[in-house]
Length: 593
Image 1 (cartoon, one colour):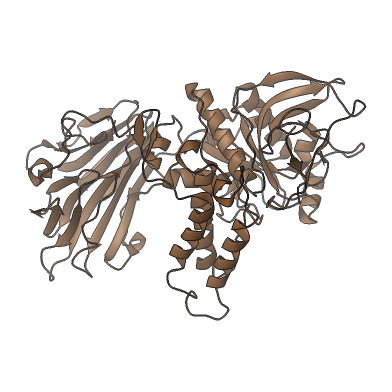
Image 2 (spheres, helix red, strand yellow):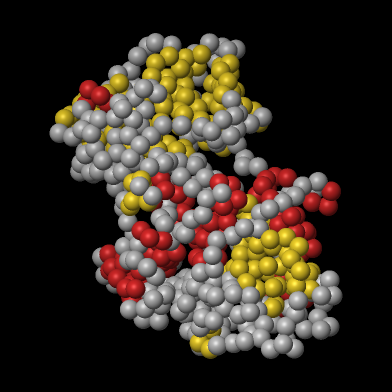
C-alpha cells in the first residue's frame, strides 16, 4: 500500500498529511461491476494540487484508448508548465484581481493542448525529480512561484513591478517542473508538441462541460463561479437528474467522463467509498443551498469509468482517483449515485456521448459543431505595434488550420528573419512586399503567393515606407511525425521553389498537392454564376476564402451567403459546397490532408 493523504476542502491538495489506511472487515462492502470501460493506469499527483491535470489527462488517455486502441502516458508537467504561465499572465493582466493557485479545471488541460500541444511523459523530467523527490512535489515550488507573481502587481502602480516578469516566472516554473520540449522523439518519430497532439486521434473541439444550478436559468451557458475556473469557460446548465441521465447514457455507450466536484465531506478515505449519510436526500434545492453556504465546494477532479451496484442493489460509479495505489481498491473509489447528485460541480465529456430525443430533447445542438464562417469587419481588427491583424480562423476554431489577415503600416517589417517548426503561406492582398527566405529576397505584388516551409529563415517587409502592405497568412500545424519527409521536400528551399505569381487563369495552384507541405493545398478558382463545386465529407479540413463576388456556401447541410472578404470553414468529416451567386466569383479553396 502506498502512502496517501487527507485532503483539504480546496482544490490545492499540496498540503497533505500522509498516513496508511486499511479497511476493516465490518467496513467492507461488496460490489458487482455493471459496466467497466478500459482506462490507463492510476497515477499519483502526490504533493501537488494538480488533480485537475491528472484527472483530465486520464480522461483524454481513455478517449484515445476508446478511439484508437492505443495506450499513452501524457505528460502532466507539460500542462503544469504552460497552464501556470497562463495563470500568471492572467493574474497580471487582471492587476491582481484574480487567483494564482495550483488548482484548475478540465478546461485548463484542454486549452493548453489546443494552444501548445502535449508530449508524452518521457519527454520531460519525471515529476518531482527536479525538486529532489520521486513524485510531483510543489511544497517549495508553488510558494516561490506565488510570491513572485504577486510581487509583480503593486497597489496603485502604473505598470508591472519589473518589465521582464514573464522571463522570471517562466524560469521558476522550468526550474521545478522542467522546460517544455520544442522537439522530442517518440517511438522512433520526431515530433513537436503540436503535431504530437494532432497525431493522437482526438478532435479537441468535441468536449463540453455540463453543470446544474438554479441561480442561472436551465438551458443556458454560464461560467461556474468557483475560484479555480479562472479561464472563465462556460458550462451548459441542465437539471441534475438530466445531468445524471447524460452521465449514465455516456457510460452505457462506452464513454468515460471527467468529474469535478466536492470531496471534503462524506468522501471516506479509509473505505474509498463516497456516500451520503442516512436520511440525506439529494435534491436540486439542497445542491443550491450547500453551494451557496460553502458546504459544497469545487475541490477535486477525477475520472468516472464505470458503474456498479452494492449488495443491496444501490447504484455506484467506478471513479479513478489520482492519489496513487491507494485504499482497498488500489486507486479506484466507489461513488454512490446520490453522492454524485449532491456533490457534482460539473461533468466534462465527449459531446457525441450526449443522448438526444425523449427526455433529452433539446440537447441535440451540443452534439454538433456549428458551421463556422466569418465576414471581415474593421471593428474586429486587432491593433498592434506593426499595424493590425484580423483572425478569420483562429486556433480555437479549426483542428490545425489557421487563417489571418495582417497589415503593416507602422513599421517596415513585423520582425527580423526567424524560424519555427510550422509552415506558413503568404498571399499578398494589397501593396508590394519583399519576402526574405534563406538568404534570398522576392518581391511580392498583389495576388502573388509564397510558401515558407517549417525551419526556413524568413521575414516579410514593406517595399516602401509610403505604402502599407496587407497580406493573408495560412498556417498549418502538421499532424504526424516530422520524419515522414515527402520525396519532393528539400532540406534547403530556394525562392524559386516557393514563389507563385498571380494568374488570370480560371483555376491555378498556389500550393499544389505535388508541392504540399504537411498537407496544405491552396487553389485559386473562378466560377461562373450558377455553377457549383462540391466537397465530400472526408478526413480533410476545407476553407473557402471569397476574394471577389458573392457565393452560397453550404457547410454540412447549412447554407449561408458569403460576400467578398468572407471565409467559410468546414471541419474534417463534414461536407460542403460553393455556388457562384455573382457573375465573377473568385475564391481560394484551402484544404488539408
